Image (tube, rainbow, N blue to C red; front, side):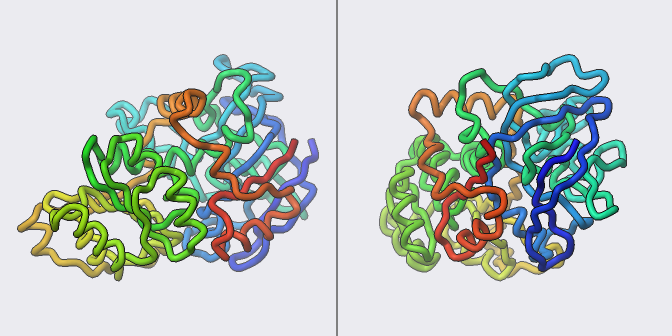
Length: 369
């Protein structure tokens, strides 16, 4: 079939709206008609080159819609099913899935390589085969994805809101409750209040933290952080240190979660200073692939048992966590509609990323229907 998609043809380029050919699903795949797609920062990393990828590629890795065709061997999904697409596949059989960490599934290696898991492509344009961001390519009105990357959800849940849970909400929320292991009475610092950090704030509040300090240089984002559950806000890490030191009587935070647009090694020591003994620094933000040096006090790690942890998808399990997060929204325990700053059409995708870079968005959303 023919459909419309936003394609990145070269690093540093713009997303170009193309009429593309889309193949039918192969074995273990489904075709989805998209309702909405989030504008996540990770797709910006494709543009800047911070995230290595094989181009050209249909962008987008955060979407929801309905199944319109199933491939051979698919038995647990039917035409018409509402689904969320998650940016990391989970096979359920590799050693990591078996250990209960499906976010580290061996199939996740293919996230930015371009072709599908069987090594072939589903999109074509200009005589070339086109890859799909995280095997998904949600910057398209229709896409074909592995069943391993799909979560069926309850009928009736708004699909535009469900799209946000495919990456940003689950990653941020999980970074707080899973990766940082925050508990009732803890103090958390969230550095960067974008699409991920806003939900780390929500996760910290849901975990029962007594203090949640949100750090962002953009005043608008600090205001939104307060609405989402932050008890304090700061424009810089230095300002946050003063706040955390004061409210904890010098004991400092239990966890600091890095959710900035790009992680930088030079910032690690200042983050470690935000946490006290046995405090955790959780790095959720992506760094440039060539960033391999960090400034930090190794003595602090030993004497105070401080820890630095990576967080992929917030250490979450999509099939388990996505339905629960949607139910939390239904119960009034998780804000989703409030995360959406502005909606765009597909041909406004570049405008959406301009707004993100300028700090005007917590989360932009492409709506198809």
